[in-house]
Length: 470
Image (cartoon, rainbow, N blue to C red; front, side, top):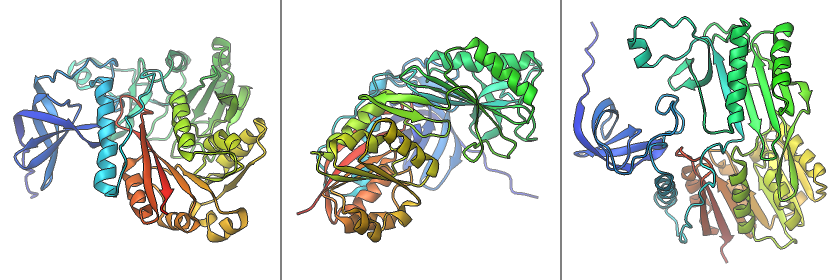
């Protein structure tokens, strides 16, 4: 007979004192730290402990005894259920304070190096409808809230189009309205969902791996161009054409309508052929007269307007005069490389994903840039001493690695190359801080600029300039 699981306590009248990592709030109960989602500093709440370790615990608010004066009314009806936008209950000014502190804490506690004054975070001008890309999932297992399940109502229609529920991979929350993208995105998703239901088209069963309607990606560029990519779980040409023809007829604003048949056991489409139904196979973004082509597999910063501000910070930190050889590491589709090319002698971009490098070369060609060169391959394999000896020692390096930060071998090659300046763009201040510590022997940090790309979430970008010690 197994041991009976110990009942975890309810902590009554607990005061939430701060915002913590991963979008959670923080309270203290004696010597123990308690992490609580959807809390606000100043809340007095009864908190039920869900998980307990030696020095910390995780819990949820069972009853809000006295709401914090900081609290604001969430604008989304799905707040607290869909798992996104976890800071809607905090004013944007408070979100920015928390993100600023997140950067400060990471650089001071992890890097433990000499730092200049950290500049105030650059907030996003738009805090709603700021995303140019959204991805939705179709499922025949609609998530039911506790209220719906307790109501006793029969739910015969369980088809949904929306977001995966955290911790329940086969359940999808049916979304009425998402406020992160232009409302056209809502109208497109709801139209496809309703058309599929009206015509008896099956929604995907995530456990059984059957069903026609699978996923939907919507991209709305700042130029007004619109891309829709529908993924179908069955190769049913007649049904697929009926969906696409209906979309084309009812939404003439779609400039790129594409589709893919995905019968794999995962939703990724990077390794599949994406077919064009109508329009062009790409859309375009624009910055300072530069056009950036974005295909269905292309990476592009999802907040277009704030991406421009981020890239301006990076370019400003690089202090280019027109004579520099610039290396852009983790270049993606070459957005930063092409953005700074007009201020440099030459820019060399390196990226792991070959499709992205093709996009980077195409974007350089589209914009008439002849001083860029792009290479595909694993960074630690491409960026070697031999590569630098052949292509020239960089005057400036711009690095924008994934959340995991830079591989130690890459850091060592950078140290050996000794560029005069390094501009480090990061979406994870913690791994950035670790890398800055490794660079500290030869480089000093001379500027730090946090940038908020994702309002209502805990995510923050940070740009750091390093200069070679003399």
